[in-house]
Figure 1 (cartoon, rainbow, N blue to C red):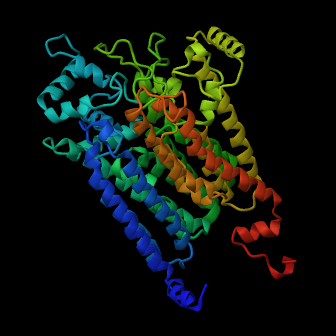
Figure 2: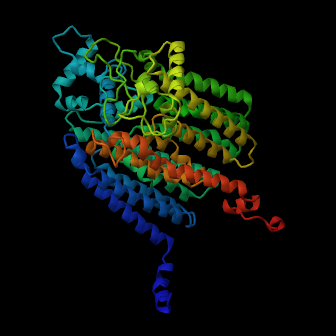
Figure 3: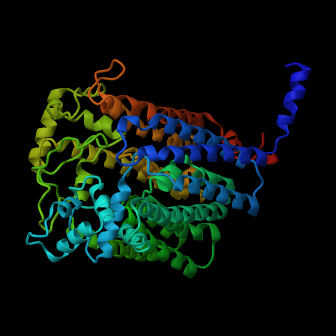
Length: 592
């Protein structure tokens, strides 16, 4: 570098971290504004092949790069109330820009609006599927409540539009009662004459408020744990969160908020101290909030062992047992309205073929026009058949599935288990359990991945129990949810938001990369639109199959490689080097 070049670069080195962060916020905001401008091209009725999926993914990529750099820079800024306020305001700005957009490639919100509408009418949303309402006729001899829903649909064109856009309308709703209450509140806040977009906006507004409340809980938890509040950027500015909640309007913001509150209450006594009596109240409150979290979305149940261990650590086993009892009873009470209508199994007469490009393995009922009070059970179908955007689970299930049950045009290239073994295992399991042979591989894979998760959870809890650092409990909570997601057959991008609020407690930054790469999921739509029947890139796979068997390796491969590298690196580092890497300087007495 010449003297002239050095003088030219010198001013750039003097740019303060605050100015850098502001510039990154501006670029990220412009990217979101462009996405909002493009979003009407994803509105219902637009041609699928004309949707600018690649452009939108590129803009989210720009936003993610800014987010990644901003997080590193924010952590260099001294903590202050002004910094916390800036993080919250920028988070609010990003969400406000994206909030005015049409949902991009996801339509779950129509189900939320319909469920809330049904509940406001005083009818259980689990009783009738949307298709049952659409197929009913007023001149038929209908049950009174079904007759009321049909009249509502016919009298309000907007309600009819919402109902007709519900995804998988043949199935009853899978959303638990606490989420149903939020749906109903959003509907009550919506005028009867509101347009479709107006109803969507009010539903999204509720979720965005819950999302911002989660950010405040994260900041409080970081302060209690003694970590830099700049880590809240990992959640507040994450493009994945902004897309899936402010744009798409997914309900997961409610469950995430309640889960974080339950963890905050459970871990509070460890960080704040206090009397045993006060800690007991924190523990019991955590149990109640935890039950509500399960009532919002079932996934928080995987944290129950961790919560029990935290409760025992903070108080005593007597109080911990009392809290466990409260958790069980409160969860049962919250879920009872759902379990009352949900069937235990999906009928073996259902068609196991994929219903659309959106799901790889999903049943379509053979009869959808029935107006009987019991619809096809959605939750059982989700737990027993639904599979999407997975890698680890796919590796297991594709090696268990006999060739006659393969749902793609060609078997997966990584299916290496001998065909005879697969057929024998499928036959044995189906005979033992009395189920259809096509269902056996999925259930065996479910059992195997669940067993792996239980072993991981046990090992993590054992390590946390003997750890001197109290934040190890929060790291354990993150890892349990993260591995639950990684081993799940359904790894929708918005499900990663379950783990994201705790990502700042993870040792490896590879976990931060997940929220960027997981958005490659939306390439599946683009591939299925442009190559519905043609093979892609010289492979034997068509569009959606190419994503399932090829792109998912690009989606998850870098993260797994990074995690393996970090694990090897931690084993090779000395304790002194590990302390320095974690931001703890060794004292002069042991520096040598």
